[in-house]
Image (tube, rainbow over all chains, first blue to last red; front, top):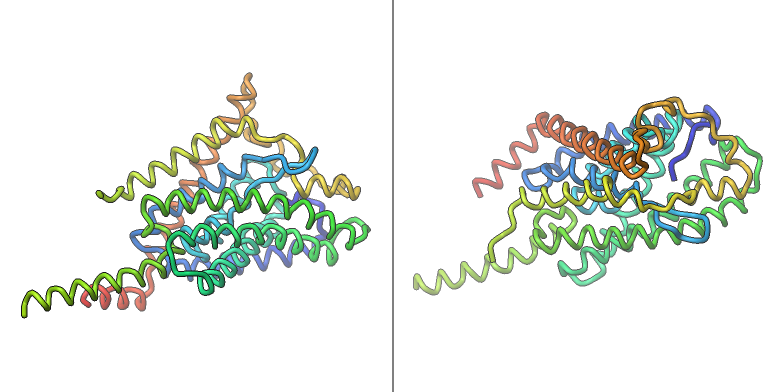
Length: 236
Length: 112
């Protein structure tokens, strides 16, 4: 969904640029609290994985393809604030080095693919974690649902921006229908990749998955208290 | 069961990223993506301007080698390494400037 130069008028591009810069600025501050000895070694690698996966366009309907956006994966693996930084780094490199996504559209692309997918993916992930059973096995499921929904929502944010500052005079209703349709299908791919990626790391080292911490903490508390009990019994 | 080391997990992710970008990318669909296809259908694809770095050595994930397979593979590997470097550097900078409140909280939890 990389927006090229020219799709949006200058005022809209300036506003999305300011919003993107503010989001990255806040993320730089907030990410400090997410980065510890477990998440920190993985941040660059998660960003690199998102870059690699974004190269892999998969066919969705005849003549149309889609690729990962990666907001939900990054948020669940290293934390939402760090996730915004990961995907923004990918978009910056793509725009500058690979001519993928316009330079004047960088702010728009950060808003759509870094900000929207992280916010929607993480919010839904957390909401599902509260509602569903507190089991480690549910983490990839919650992540996949968040990933699935994040893609069509990002496409609707594009439509909303287009209604405000799109450079062509087209029917916004028609644009919304077309964007939502194809991006719902792309969302299925996003969900599958997210499920596999989060599930793989969870299988070998659940403690390295940021989004699994609350589930693991609860489990550790139970184990620790039972250990203390048995020690007390032995001592007595 | 022995715990898999963080180093091994990190190496695994790097290997997967390099394989996806360096090898699998050649087999990716070349059809227009969702946005391009909708822009084409709705008739505004031509409003896209020329890219400012469109003549760069890696533009459009093409390293300009004789073989298409090598061109996209090299571009992908370079991209993975550049993103990895930036992401890791960013992490280092953000962590070095740890605010005092965080230090206090860490020392409390360590002593507890």
